[in-house]
Image 1 (tube, rainbow, N blue to C red):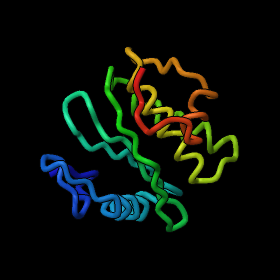
Image 2: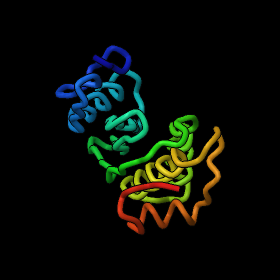
Image 3: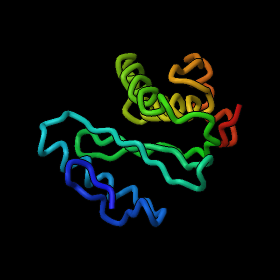
Length: 142
């Protein structure tokens, strides 16, 4: 079973394809206690196949877990997906977005990056904002 710094997500099994969002909130809470973080974000990937995943994330801040919508992503390239998530979250938080809106922006940026070949996310903020705002069916393809 997968873990984060030795902390396992209760109710989840990477090999079994089971992802319990609340279990990851427990992981985030424990990470914050251990390391003194102000907030913790964790991407949540459930493999449907080698080229299709359900993709989302959670942000734990001020004792509250925030969960993003889940996108069904057809993967062109995984490289840079985590970086795009982190950059999107930092960008949105620095713009003063709420935790929930910042998380949605980050997940949308990362979902779009999965549809771009190479390490660099070639999508602009306006495209990310449209997807994060609900303009789409939740299926991300290019």
